[in-house]
Length: 138
Image (spheres, helix red, strand yellow):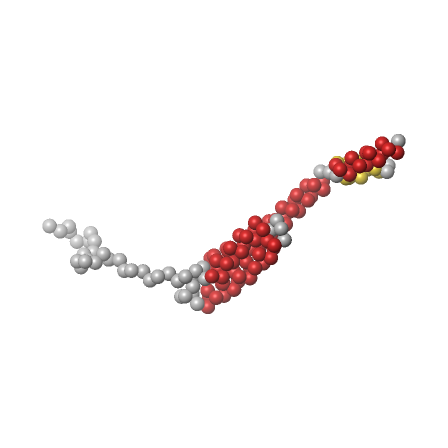
């Protein structure tokens, strides 16, 4: 006995009801290159080579987006290219902001030292030298 109508679709014997999907197009090589350069550039910004890698990530990401837009049925990876561009731009900005913060922190928290009758702000090594010179003069 079959259930009453409306509870499903009867399929012909030997079929599952699922059509095989078409294969996905490959990820564009420039998109993955942009993301890899951006990641390497983000962590490489401590030395000067990271800024060059980040710039390369932005350029590769832009070219990848143009190539994917020209042939959307052959390539995918627009989101990966955009991620490479964003990380390639934000990486150096983050490291420059961090260096600025650490530099200003060091500037504002130096040790004040009396030197030649006036108050100068110097680092600890300079303050020790100034104290040694002052003790020699006395």
